[in-house]
Length: 500
Image 1 (cartoon, rainbow, N blue to C red):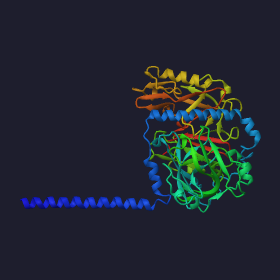
Image 2 (cartoon, rainbow, N blue to C red):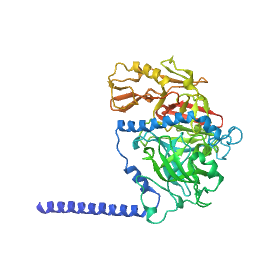
Image 3 (cartoon, rainbow, N blue to C red):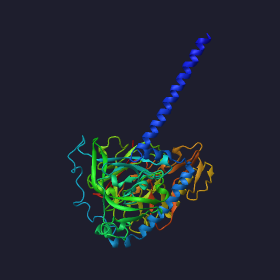
């Protein structure tokens, strides 16, 4: 009996020893593999990016969002105030007649057709909630061969850039960038810098903050790009090739896309991204460059802003109808898209807001984009800002529906009204509707304006802004809707959707 027991113990020890050898060998193997990949732009950098995610409570995240949003909104209002000065310079003008010859007719650029007779370009789009940010991220492949990055989708800016290394050698090139993937310009055969002596650098890119320094004619044109929230990116301009998926399952490319190779950046906005995709209305934005190939349209469908990273939708160039995974619950509605008033922003003509079928008393000048007011649709802002004459009646009406809930002081000045949400039911809240001047109606879900900010806590998701100034419809209000920007026909289409 004892000999049998000894044999069993011996076999167990042998199995344990071999298991240890196997695991130890795997560790050594993976370590060598990761060292071998250190010079490439592959999986290792992506793993570093994911590994360094910092946990953040909902309240901490909200405070950070409000700080950036508030600065951004003030700058948008200032841009509207100065629009006459900016437009007279001619430096921010887009095409005077985009309907004429600039955009290709819908899908005429491609001989490849799917069953609907049209092919569109698409890029994966996710909420940044897992990264502790209120932005939406889009997957972006650039260069030859393509290098993949995660960029912030921003309809309020016009430069597309990524963290970048240009003409670096030796140890400096191998130096790891904290939490970030880096575009290696020297590894791309299609990377073509813009000379600082060119007219493009001196005049056309002045609106993108090109710098005047030019030590030699062929020195790359440099920029110091400034954002509305105080963030900045410094680098050089270049033309590159962008690769993306098509809705028929193949790949497409756009050549000579203006991009920024940013060697440094500052600001909270870029903490968890590799750069920014400029989707604003501007001659050199990626939105216009891609849209000209696909019928003058682009669209996005924003999943719930608290969705984890594995829940995704698409940023689409061309008709959204070619992407069968995105469907609307009801028919799409259309309204005028106001372009060129205050580039690079997209403005809309609102005539009022109703709550529970009651039109609120808001002065008409609040909505006049050609005066001191107006409304901007902005994917780069999280919350929705209303100028004082609109904010006051909206908040007063919504507070009445939550009068039976215990109010809370969260020490967040921008959020005026928060409650203990125990027992909350959306049916208690009147439906809010944005009424457009041409009769279209946008009815967001209740969760987009009575928002979750912490476990058991909800707040009214509007922020007061000064008057005169612009109101901003942020991405939380836009969630669970598809938004199609028809730049060729100055039309905005939208419809309710799960976006997945």
